[in-house]
Image 1 (cartoon, rainbow, N blue to C red):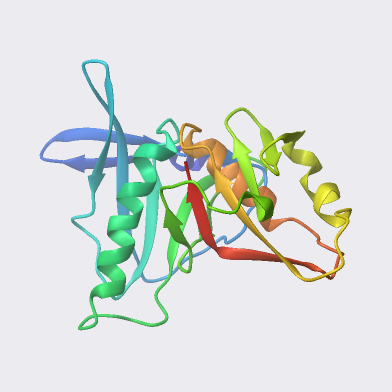
Image 2 (image 1 turned 120 degrees about the horizontal axis):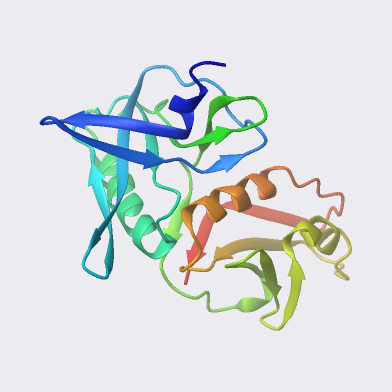
Length: 213
């Protein structure tokens, strides 16, 4: 597909200066098409030894779907605070609010060779450690998960882990993420969670709350 290279790198031309966003990659499409949308860009920048998340939202319209094009190299500790600010701004603008407008992260589906989107409108982030660790699964940087603060597993074992928990009453599972993991690893972890098939009826996954620490 001759346009696929544009999926991997999104270009923004402003004031005769070219900037680029390297998108995360995955092998599955969650949402393939989003109509009536506005782009938001979060660029990877460096100043000396410091990494900076540089936000450009000048073309965003509150009443539209927002697509967040975020550089895959940025760590979550820089990305999520900026996402939170934008979420709060959109939620607070009652004058132009559109109840049907969603927020999406963009990424590249390298199997389907298309731009894909992950919805996150209802997610509320907290930049802190959860107080009760017993029902939180922590995605660690590098591809492992931590459960009950001491047990570690490869993240591809998560489905088996949850379906084989020895519990007899309804239990809420909330996901948290290593603040130092890359945004690309975060998106790949989110896609893994989305694909989970939970057969244990006592398990309830809360998709609306996430902790970053």
